[in-house]
Length: 258
Ligand SMILES: Nc1ncnc2c1ncn2[C@@H]1O[C@H](COP(=O)(O)OP(=O)(O)OP(=O)(O)O)[C@@H](O)[C@H]1O
Ligand SMILES: [Mg+2]
Image 1 (cartoon, rainbow, N blue to C red):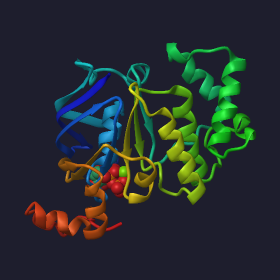
Image 2 (image 1 turned 135 degrees about the vertical axis):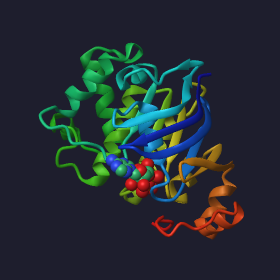
Image 3 (image 1 turned 180 degrees about the horizontal axis):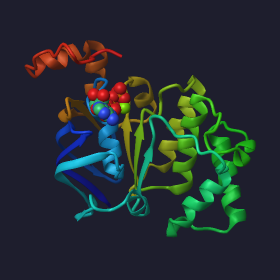
Image 4 (image 1 turned 90 degrees about the horizontal axis):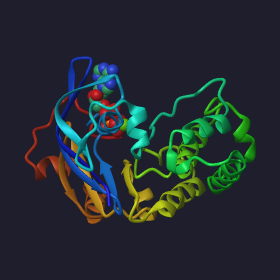
C-alpha cells in the first residue's frame, strides 16, 4: 500500500492565494472523489500535486510514502507513480501519440517494454477507449475533439499504470458511451496498488466509478468529507445547502453554479 499525504497545503498563483490549507490522505486500494464549486481550487490542487511550475507553494507538505515530494520536478513525481489527467489536455504538435507514449514509458522502469509489446498494448487501450488505431500516428491531441482528448488521457493512464491517478474533470465533454468506457478504464486499474482521485462536478461518473470517499473543496480547503451519500445530498441540495450547513457567508464575487 502507498500513501499520498497532503498536510496544510497552501499555494498561490501570481501572488493570489488559492489553496488555503488542504489536508487530505489518499491511499492505494481506494477511489476518492473531489467536488466543489467553480474556482474553489480543485485544478490548482491537482497541478500542485504534480508540481506545475506556475504555482508557488507557500506552506504545508505533500508526502509520498513519508517522503516530501514538493522539491521534486513533475517528471520525478511521475516516475514515483503520480499521474495527472488534465481538465484541458494540451495539444502537442509534431509528436505522435505513439512516440509520446513510448517516451513516457521509457521513463517508467516497471513499464518499459519492447516496442512491439507497447504497440500491442496501446492498440488495446485505444480500442477500449473507443479510439481508432489511426490515433497512434496523429500528433498528440492536435485537432482531437474535446471528448477524444479526454479518452486519450485515460489511454495514457492505462499505459502508465500509475499508483495515484488524479483525473481532473475527466467526465466533462464525454458522450454517454465514452463515460462508461472511461469509468471501465478506471475500474480496470482498481486494486491494492492503485488510487484514483476523481475531480468532478457530476454524480454521473460516480455511479460507474464508486468512490470510497467524497471530499468537498470550498475556497481552497477541504470543507467536509464523507461517503457516496454526500454526492447525493449535494446533487439534491446544491452548494447553497453546504454554505448554510457550515455557516459560510455568501461572497458576491464567487461562482456557486455551473
Ligand atoms: N493565472 C492565474 N491568475 C490568477 N488567478 C488564477 C490563475 N489561475 C487560476 N486562478 C484562480 O484560481 C482559482 C482556482 O482555480 P481552479 O482552476 O483551481 O478552480 P477549480 O476548482 O478547478 O474550478 P472549475 O470547477 O471551474 O474547474 C480561480 O479563482 C481562478 O480564477
Ligand atoms: Mg478545474
